[in-house]
Length: 139
Length: 139
Image 1 (cartoon, each protein chain N blue to C red):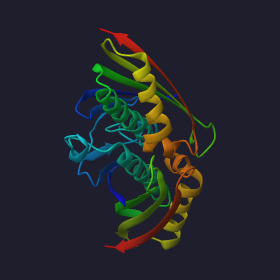
Image 2: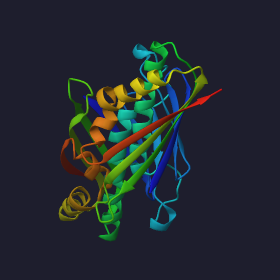
Image 3: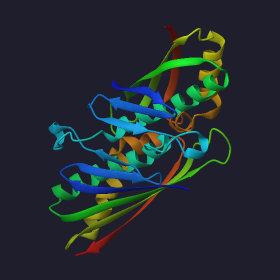
Image 4: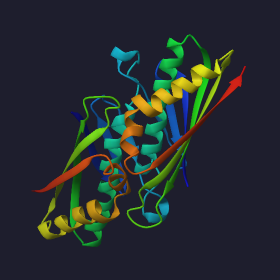
């Protein structure tokens, strides 16, 4: 069982915390009555899929003895036009920086995350078509 | 289009930021090599569904001239046992505190969020069965 508690502060500001003990401020756009003091709830899904897959990819590349110096995941989400405006498409780009990184290792790491391990991806793909690509930046 | 960028720091620590401009630290459990400096990615989904529906409920209750003094959303997620361990069930409890809050207004606000407006709920329900309840605490 995984638990979270979300508490209203004021305006559209909420603070969420979960079992790991860390708190996150969420808020709405100024145009809809928020004060933009925190992340939008829908943004948390994109940040979550990036973090989840990033942890997988870094762990697998380390096991494969790759010298990773940097990893960035760019996530783009497309929402439906009509309410409830769910995510219909999410595209992810993994950018791996390092020295002599093996292309095959990166390919395998990203595939293992996307097709086997990433819990957030597996949850979101019930609604959104998820696509991905990766590139290596030698440095 | 909704965008996020997630950047690796070290260990299993990542920082995610999205278009609204707020950053969130994510990290893994100590048992799996993290340092528990931030939220787990899967927790962000539970916090997100709480924040999303909370903003709806507060907005609707205000329009209905209800004197809301507090709102808390407790979210419990059940994961599949096997990898990728996606969420299979999410239960939400809305606890509304206030003075002379009309039961019918709360019922309607929660239903409108769950069945019409909440984008996070609509995205997650592709994978997880989502249930909810609510209670009013008079104060």
